[in-house]
Length: 334
Image (cartoon, rainbow, N blue to C red; front, side, top):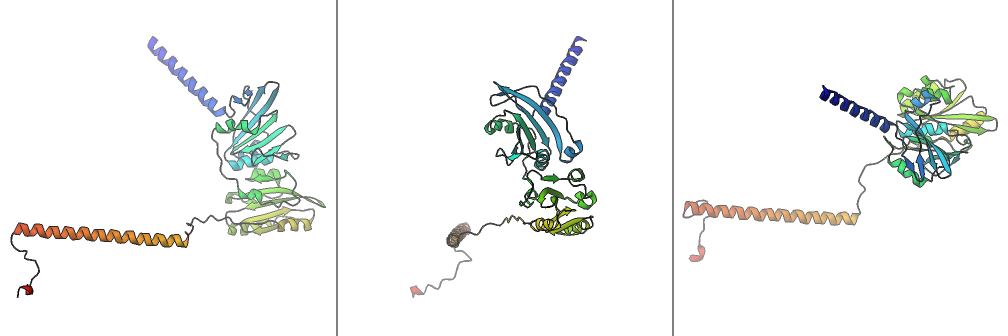
């Protein structure tokens, strides 16, 4: 019985260790040390808008306090399913007064720190946070890191009179209801694979909201364009796969000007080999011909030697003259 009890105790310890290891791996977004700062106990962060975060692909979050001599900062991270979700959350959490920063392509300075996206992660540091070079250790150990390219749609908003930090990325009915509730989900038709980039514009008569919806094909965009035209007060325009729309604009003329600036550019990757230099191609052709001629000549020599050797062996085996030998007139003897 003692042996059985000991085995059960050992199995329990192993199971407990595996559970603790799984929990630690799941929660360990931040390392124990960043530069000169040492990490305190990690904390979980409450999600303010669970529905919105879930639509953006929210997976987990972590917060930790870091301390050094006379300095400290708070680090918060949110891991999303992909880079597009992190970009969408970055736009949603970015405060109106934030200023652009160079820490990453998606980063801003705030009054008390910095907010930036890296792959499918969104980070917010407040306090005396370390320089960007020290964060390489953080990036290197991030679990489930995903760094797919960001959608080109985010760059399609016209820049003129765009209110800074007003951009919002729409991935479904929840984000649509949060940022442009005047458009119904049935009109946007996210089930067809659409996404949208939204921004606010300054006009002489007030703020104007512009949303650009991207659809998989021009045919779908054309069909959706007809539905957008039925939205009360909507002014819309279709360009290729895009449908740009503003609802009840305070200044119709300004709305037309903004809509006219929406451009659609098709990016095509042509996987065809680039033609070589003509001179080089000619030299390569001549070289290939010489190599081919040499191979044919070699085969002829080998075939001739083989045939001749076979005839000689055949003559020796039969004795006398070869019955298949040529008739010789020997005219030189006469």
